[in-house]
Image (cartoon, rainbow, N blue to C red; front, side):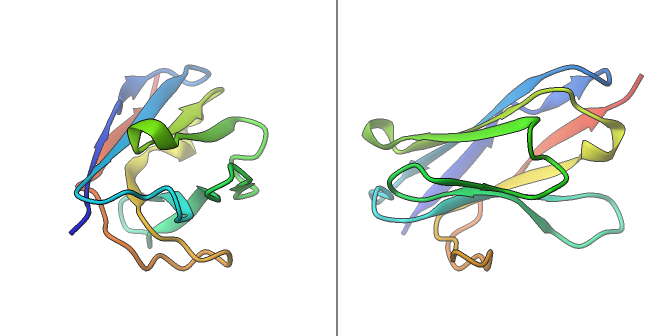
Length: 119
């Protein structure tokens, strides 16, 4: 059973930066595509980015050029560097341990970490 723990969320002003981490335990995820999703109040959960086992990233258009996804397979950890944050990035961010190339999340979810972008 994979257990995921997200961290790094917080409150920042527009234009600021945050780095989210997703630490996995219970099983190695080196062979799986992992991903970040977010859910804003009143909206459905949406894909933000995913990364293949070899490190190939995919980004939603809304975050392309501002967010960078990465992974450290030796530590079973995935990251999301978020720069030039906007108010519309405000959401609870979740990681998933097994993401299909077309974006469907089939793996375990973490508990989420809140990101609030406000002046």
